[in-house]
Image 1 (cartoon, rainbow, N blue to C red):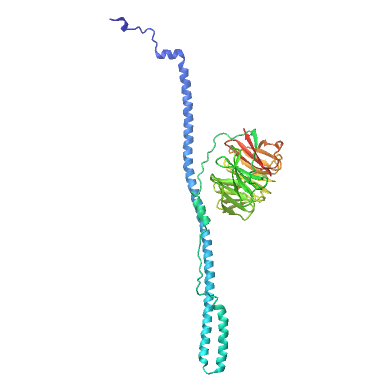
Image 2: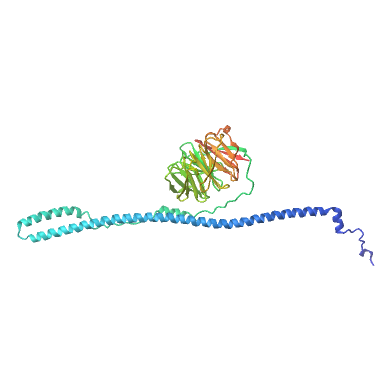
Length: 458
């Protein structure tokens, strides 16, 4: 037999012996532990997603309920408009009917008098005296009645018509649905608990060739696309700024000086005007004014959330409306009957905490729940005449002091963490602040200045 057909197995070792000698069992144990850790992470994520699925279903139900509620509000508003139109028609009908009825009665009376004169003249016969008197009276009636009778024209017919307001048709034709569906991402990360630090600072001039005066940027906010909206009080305009290109990309003239601006949804903004009204603005390709809501009181700050408008009056009251202009609640006293405000200013809604924050020159930063129930007030000697506030989206609030020319940071526990922008930076009278959480940019606007300031934070 060929010797090359067989080989000796003396040098072959079993797999078990190799594993024991190499210590691979330790690696296996370590791998198993890592796999188990990852399994636990998967289970945790799975549990979280199961909770998310339940919340998503609940969000659908809540959204549908809100949509139906909004529809009912619109139905109520349309019913009110219909009733007002019916009343106008009824009033015009009664007025015209009464006028025509009065003319008819006069004509009937004139006809009777004239018939009587004809009968009297015909009956006078050869009685000269009777004929003379009848002729005199007949001529008098002829003259008197002619003056009136010929004013009642027979050829013309007076009536009336109803013409629907074309503005309503235009408004409804421009909108695609009863509202917007907004996706909110709830951050599960731990909120920032330390004081933000300024990494970089730059300034931008927002004066444009069409401006007739120096700018006075009284308010600012970011839209969903990361563009900055600015209310220019002096030049009666709303400006849209692209901070990436450092340019004013669009401006929309306002019917009056604007004070504050906020986004209603991704395609619409609301602007408070100095003469007691809220102007809505389309944020589509080019900004343009749409509908307007008239108010019976002064308006200053404005913030919108889930169909509610929170409006301050630069005095002692916070008003809560829906976006159609229906008043829901007036807030001015706490549960002990004390005045909450002295001189309120800007208002903002913080989606992270679900709180409404109002700046007051004397009472500091005042917080409420979204229904308008008073929660607390924050004051500190480092903050003088607080005028504006905004959230970082994670539980922290930035508050600017018009008198102290600074911006402070208040943490999730409603305690001050410190000063982010100091008076030493020489910004002057600060009017408003807003924060872009995606880029961690804090924007500060200054009273009577063409410049705004952008602080990149870390």
